[in-house]
Image 1 (tube, rainbow, N blue to C red):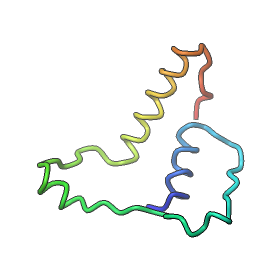
Image 2: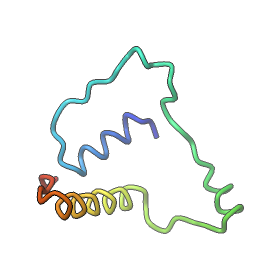
Image 3: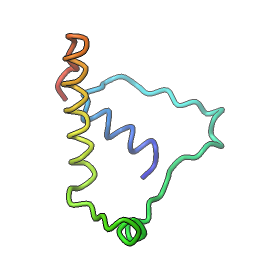
Image 4: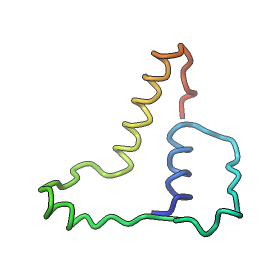
Length: 78
């Protein structure tokens, strides 16, 4: 998954409607990471049971509650 795809997913889940300005001068930085799920399972005995998008959605929901509790300001609903 590219960083751009991840940012797009987070924006959709968080209801963020603004434009993202990508800094082209930083283009030689790492654009994506890859996880070897089989290696993780072998090393730690862990297998993901919930799809990534589901966990990302839970994270955004947690952040909404956390932000509201800390500041009294809620994020707009997606």
